[in-house]
Image (cartoon, rainbow, N blue to C red; front, side, top):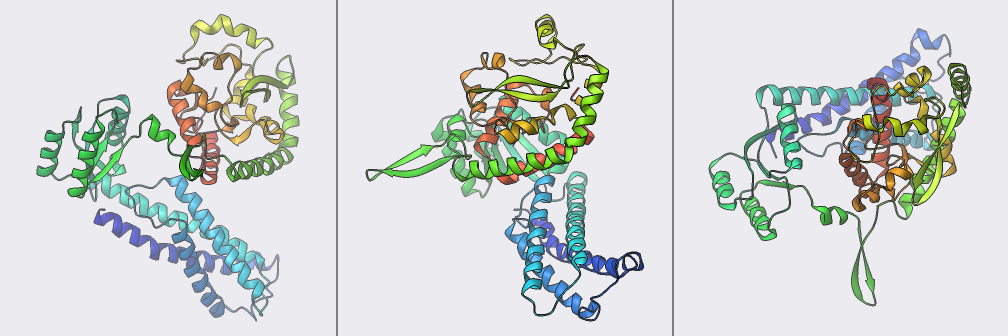
Length: 461
């Protein structure tokens, strides 16, 4: 672990504490300011003067630091994902708010300003995240500009995945990695000789299609030299991410589960889907009516269409706002020669079947909003693999059909990683990863990133 990572991680503690204090102070003075007090008179100054409030704020800030530590926000790593860090911050600050509310409930002294509590919660999320964002920017600037605390790596492998890793490292120097040398194959003697003579922090094995004994030998050597060892798992190791140990008549039996979405995971995900789809449909119902009228005015045909899709071996009809002319499906065969996407999927730019209103709907992903009906009915989920057409599935290879294990989603890993621009194999790999590594945090991360992409990426049409 680099000293720079330790320094920046240690810096986060006082910065987070300061941000909590600033958020609380800003909330208090906003509530007592003329701007707010003329709208709602201040009634709590006698039982909560600022000096007493500040003492409570110090305690709440300390509790906030504890909540952030439990959320994993002080784990030391070379790089942290921005959206994941925002979600962890949101959870930690919300837990702090619950602690404050619980204290107020149990306290013998009344506290009548819910405005301060809610405002401090919003300010704390913003202030803490901005403070961390600033530290992150400074760290990445120093790494990218001055090689401050970089990780020097040796890469082993010559396949496409290894090329992708190398390309990402070379494209983004602020990630904190520098490639010292790349070996096309697992040349043990040459690698050990190089590692012994040069300053290296990590070894990355880009492919696992090597002799297992040689891989273990390299791993042991890295342990002896105190070098980090990373590798891309093979197919069996990927399957083994979801295992459950049971006993059968006294004998240990390992079950490789299809997905972590078994048991309680499935129940929790369905609960979130029902609440989220109900909320979305209630809020968007007036908007749905307006869009439907505009579609009818723009072109002939129904406002909503039901498209045949397959989910968990069952056929259902996916609802979308119509964005194409009537009979678009029949025109697909004529346009197949212009298909720009490799594999069994179909996409062409400037598709002549799309209406003027349809281009607007697709640009802002509005055409997909009626899928909330499918989510409420239990045919889809808010987050999951892309819905698949019956004719596409007929062309899938055996390894592709794993994406059919769970319900499709309105958004998913592929949609936030390039959507229709992704090669089909890459889309399947991302969806397979999601199925095998599902978590509530991952779903919320995908939903948050989807909202950001809607306003920053207009390539859908």
